[in-house]
Length: 395
Ligand code: NDP
Image 1 (cartoon, rainbow, N blue to C red):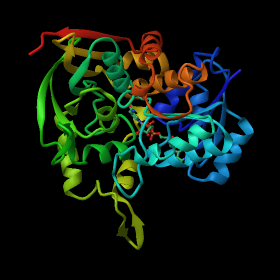
Image 2 (tube, rainbow, N blue to C red; image 1 turned 180 degrees about the vertical axis):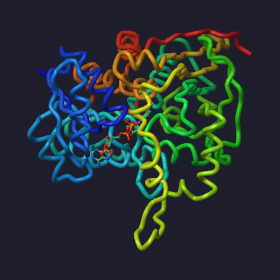
Image 3 (cartoon, helix red, strand yellow; image 1 turned 45 degrees about the vertical axis):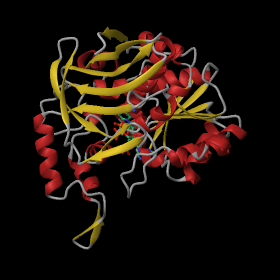
Image 4 (cartoon, rainbow, N blue to C red; image 1 turned 60 degrees about the vertical axis):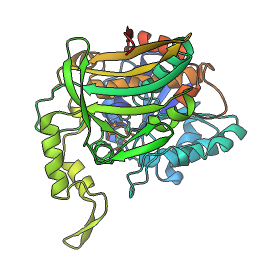
């Protein structure tokens, strides 16, 4: 019987716990631990079978290591915040446990999105015979697997990649983020960056947009170029890639609010003095904004996230669009969460399942496109994220 420890009981952690609980043949025993123990208990009360819960500050090894040592999980799913990644990887090494997360490490004081600090653990995981899987959410995560699958089955060479992330859902609130507000706003307000013929090019935040016509009745939406972490590993691992970009849709209301918050300094991540106390404005803002886990009952509409790939097979140019459409209300009915938490929590469960089954057990630290995409693609269809592949005329 295998055991999994899930760290982080927010929107994504709740879905990961729910989906692991649906697969008892792999996840024999589950513990959900987070900074606020009461949140774990609230999630546990909604699950189809009993799980264990605990309070833990994952930044504190004196709390984390004994928790892991006592429960003795086979794998830790880290769905806390990017700030905890290295501390949890250290604890996994110390306790001899496999590791999986959904977001690259970030230092709280610097909004930098880079895999370097986690890739530096490769040798240590290899030596201990442990597997660490990085970025097993949707993007990063499923998008990396889509690229690996396309490379394996549909292309000799992929020259252009556009990852296009559309949330066409509406929660009816003037301003809310679909995952942790602090992490979301750090990402969206960073400079845009993309890969073009061997070099990274940069633009001001949200200063380049295009319109894309999304399938399944979603229709035409404006998408903005952002830097997204999976580009860093994909340009290394996908053969022949000349250009790689990432795009995301935002509503007018979101953009207007964000601009004003930025203009008045509320998105700053450095500490400012407030009545004799140092506070970080973005952290204060997070405390005021809706909890993403509370958006489930409010959100209607769909997400559509996919990869548009251009390249060639057997000397003939081709265009392939691989995507998933997910309905917010269907996610709500199944696990009590909106689709952004769902599309992250399901791939976290699938990645963990493949490691525990031995299919993805491979000592070292891996991004998803470095692992066999076929079993992951099969499980996406099986566990709630069916995908579609469409071949468009090359041009
Ligand atoms: P939430 O803010 O809803 O949840 C984060 C949880 O982590 C909270 O319950 C929080 O505890 C807990 N936590 C924070 N710090 C600690 C700590 N030091 N020790 C233990 N627990 C801690 O975030 P989301 O669920 O929306 O996102 C979770 C992760 O998923 C993030 O890293 C995010 O970047 C990633 N993500 C990845 C996506 C992908 O597609 N790859 C998409 C969306 C999200 P408390 O309740 O006490 O605050």
